Image 1: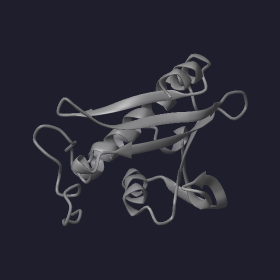
Image 2 (image 1 turned 135 degrees about the horizontal axis):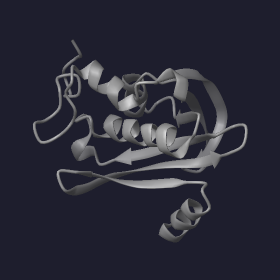
Image 3 (image 1 turned 30 degrees about the vertical axis):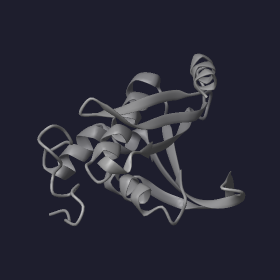
Image 4 (image 1 turned 60 degrees about the vertical axis):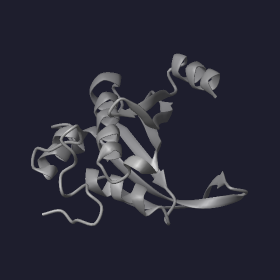
Length: 160
């Protein structure tokens, strides 16, 4: 897997990242399917250890990766495709303000079957201030870190 990630990254088709929280490896985020030319897009996939879920780690990681893709790499559009029943991943893109574009029936082969996915997307023009700035503004300036998450990120609480 690591060899594949390195080869795809070297070819400019993928950006693999690890996610650390408080000095511990807790997840992975990959920008894959990078297409250049008139499209300039990619899609984001991610996972996070359940021990840190709900602490704002993944929304922060996605925001950082999207900002890097838009501002440094030069991509124009980012998609995230999520299985409809995956509530935690849907909350990540909802917190970040991704726009839902529709359903892709039988999109990916997972766990022995073709699974539907919902498509969420953002373009660079939709976040001129950057996605991390948008997330911070929604949180009232708080970000995940040593001081802990804002109330909007703690399980069992709702945003103000």
